[in-house]
Image 1 (cartoon, rainbow over the protein chains, first blue to last red):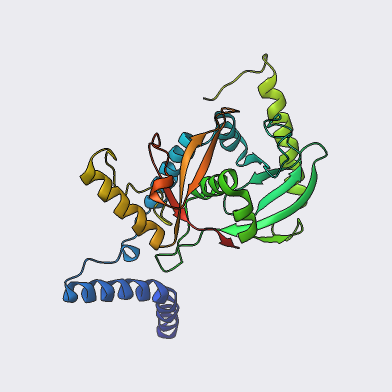
Image 2: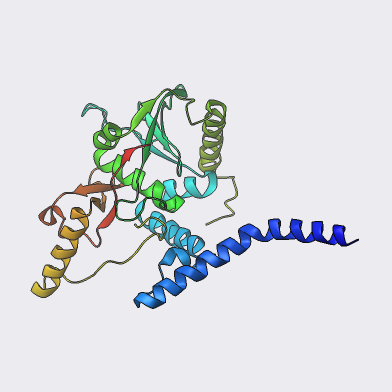
Amino acid sequence: MLLALLVLALVAAVLAGPVLARVLKRWLARRSAARKGRPLAEDHLYDPGRERRAEHRARELLRSCVNDEEWAMYRDLGFIRVPGRHLGDTRRGSDVRRPPYAYLVYPHKPILAYVPDTAQLLSEYCVQFPDVSGDGRSRLPASDDVLAKWMALTSDEARVVGQANMHLVGRQLDPQRVRRDLWRLSEWERRRSDPKSVQTRS
Amino acid sequence: MKPGHGEILLTEGDPELREDEERLIGEFRRQLDEGMWAAVPTQNAGSGRREAMMVRSYTEIPPEAERVIFFPRAAGG
């Protein structure tokens, strides 16, 4: 009986170990900060709502910057299509729905280049916006990442493409999933252009 | 935009006022010195579509711009 209790106590101690270590580490950090008279670093003050609030603000900022159609696309499908701009002057101003090539912008995933007319996948551009001032551990909220890519592509496409690592499609993005997204996009556009279609979201 | 936080208001003011403008210029330079990119949301005069304009100096900011958005510079992922 005593042996069983000892084994049980040992198992409980092992299981509680990581939790206790975390509590101890936090307590030591708090004590160290108090001794030095500094406020506690934000990383040690866990706030479960911080990321949610940051994402909420990011969505509002994105909505205020992009075109209404692009916002609706992101809200409904989770990505934005940005028309390619490396065109001759004669092609500029052509229908933005059918540019010679375009990009799909996903949050925290590579930018995908494709041909809208044929749905041919061209390449993926791996680009990120790292934290230059902090320790590099945190990243932008998802909607801020999309907005950063959108701003970079619409203002200086060559620059962002030049900074990115280009790969054939399939390195990080699943080609089947991308094709499915292109199909979803075409269906979404068809429904939007259909006056009989009921718009249920604003 | 700040990783882990999202949008943060850095400073605001009326560029017509000298004191405000100095503060705006100071913050603009500080952000660029920290390695951020600056962009201004604009509207294409031809197509009417919204887009962004990258600015590398304070003088490049269009007078009608209401805000400048700073975001970490792109790097290969």
